[in-house]
Image (tube, rainbow, N blue to C red):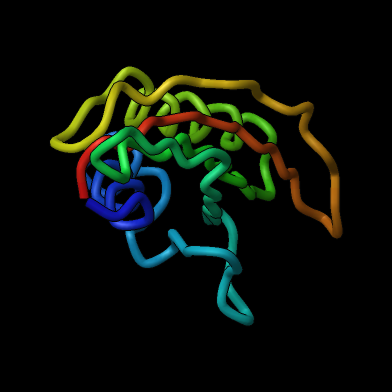
Length: 125
């Protein structure tokens, strides 16, 4: 189980989210050049690796999703669907995904940008 794959799988499985943001507009790390809003960008990190007497035990990870839209109302609708697609989900090899925080929206180059941060523990790859 790779966390990046899990994120994209859960996001694209949400029909309500894909109705607002096409699956082709969800990117890891950075959006493609000339991408038109709305779009999502996700990035993850492994914050802590735990070991036990037998070796690797688990990874505590966090990930953030940037929601970008030219319309504030649309931004908020997308954010709600991103949260619904991920929060409290649990798939094979993970504990449930939890929201860490939601950052205040920014206005950046004619776009609204808001970030939602999550945590998840991976206990099986």
